[in-house]
Amino acid sequence: MFDSYENEFGIFWIDNHILFFEFKTGVTIDLLAAQQIIADRIRIQNEKPFPVLCDSNGLVNVDKAARDYFAHEGSVLINAVAIVANPESFSYQMALFYIKVSKPLVPTKVFPDKPKALQFLGAFI
Amino acid sequence: MSQEQRVKNLCQILLEMADGNFSYRVPRTKEDDILESLTVLVNWLAEEMEESLFHSGYVNPHAIVHYTVQSTFILNENGAINDFSPNIPNLLGVESDRLPGLDFSEILGDESMDTWRATIDSFLQSKINHTFLLLNFKTSKELSVPALCNIFRLFKNKKILVSLFNAVIRNKDEVEGSFPESGYKHTNIYNRQDMQVIQSVYDYILAHGNVALPKLGKLARIFGTNEFKLKAGFRYLFKTSIYRFYTDVRLKKAQLLIKNTGIPLKEIAYMSGYNSYPNFYRAFKIKYECTPNSIRKRLSK
Image (cartoon, rainbow over all chains, first blue to last red; front, side, top):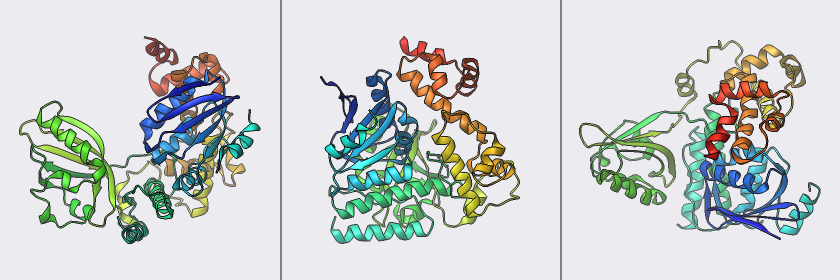
């Protein structure tokens, strides 16, 4: 059973106690967009914390204000984050930069595919 | 854009950054190759450094602080450049005599063209006389400069004023001269190690808003310094006191939860690291000038 919700920037759904988020193709995220995404995410979660799997392959850019927001205030009600990004794409470098420099407050790792990401998140359910 | 031009752009921005200039960005392309990866990394690096530099101590507040150095354009009512502040030619890399008469859109990057056209149309139709938006300026070096622009039509004549908030730092003296003193004497100018200690404390507080903050003396010892250096250094580098910063971190999270969930306020207070609701209530009211409940009430209307 999927509870799914879509906004301008991506699609959320919950499956097996994990919250999935997939960015739409070609999106650019600024602070306002980040705030929208976080607000929508919190609402969908119904006050329960979740591990999150985020597919960032469609993402084109995230500015610094948004990166910092995701990493700090935006980490409420999250246990851990697994980012899925194609290693051949700049998406992968973006994820590495985010993890290393923006220093997210919850355990965050990047994976080349969904199965590996799910394996990581399994420990946080 | 050719591969060669993309590589040239990357070299150019690295030179600018080495010269202490972090306002530039390399334009993105539709490609998804190693050069594009490099472009993203360098742009993001420039963004991070732009913020760090302005704290005159090279610390990273993990947030945007808008440092305002003003550049101004005066446009006629159709959007052609009439006049401009003297730093503009240098910022854009153009000769000053090329600018008068030029349509403002000529100095904008492609990504801002539509936004600008829509804005100038709204001004011409008198729909608006003020707006605030992010525009990307193109420079002669093929790099772009993003800047928040305050745009408004003057009251008496129909001219349009465009003010940008941007800075191009050429040397350290510019930085020192531009910042107001924080009220503390520059007695202990910190070496790099001191700054790293203070950055570590900052990062620690950012990550541990939900637990009680150790007494400052103890905190200082944990991080290998003393209370005086820690307090003074933190205030000098981050322009706020340790305790106020700690409170801000907790209350920001609380506010997010209050706005977006139905979690009882008492529980949010505990989740935010307060062990009594009255303490939370008081701190919240001081910071946001309204009660936690009033936010809920306003949203339920």
